[in-house]
Image (tube, rainbow, N blue to C red; front, top):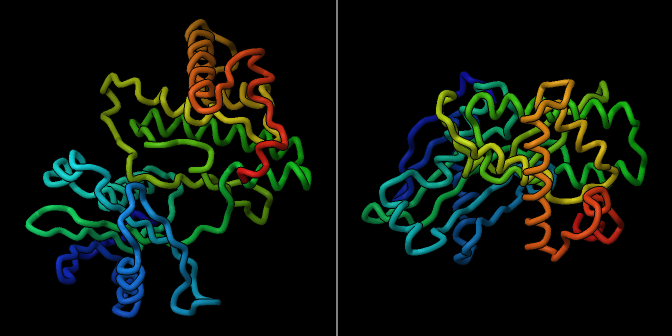
Length: 286
């Protein structure tokens, strides 16, 4: 997403939009609102894939639709931006900081008497795969040790820079990182679903970045060993040696990961190496 992109304010009925004029059109608007009209209320965001202008050969887009999740959320949304506008704003901030995010073509919110009814964000599709899918395919086809190690170290450095700049991703699970493979066999990492991402002043003493490490670490992944996780952590920490602070952080991370696995799968006992080992029972999830 270019730092030079200029979004324009547009009103359509009760909808307030922010759009890229060079990518937005009346025809695209009609298509988007037709899709939105068909959707029923959902507590969780709904993501739809579409092609435009042609159903079969058009450019790929993703439309994410938000409804207020609860009465309390409706009250809060009366005073604050919708998740769609927050996602757009954070995507721009991440892009300006040098991170890869999907290009947002438009974001909109529908309000009646200032009460938020619905909101959406429309992004251009990225050619790539979520981390678990990418690893599963390479686990079957084979991935070079060099490519895996380089990718882990690159991602570790990227997440370190994300946190040092004050960003905390709202849900940094592996499936919210998309891998795009370049022609030179290099890997690029896109940060997806940024509607809950926040940026804090770098001087602000927050510890929320630790939550991102738990989110990234909590599930077994195809072809990823405990040694690979340690390689990622070493790149993330930026230190070749194991300081006391890093050892303490690793112990904390193991405790939190075990707790999360116990909550979701009743799995926490035994060695941590075995706990985090991937097996084919997970394949159905990919």
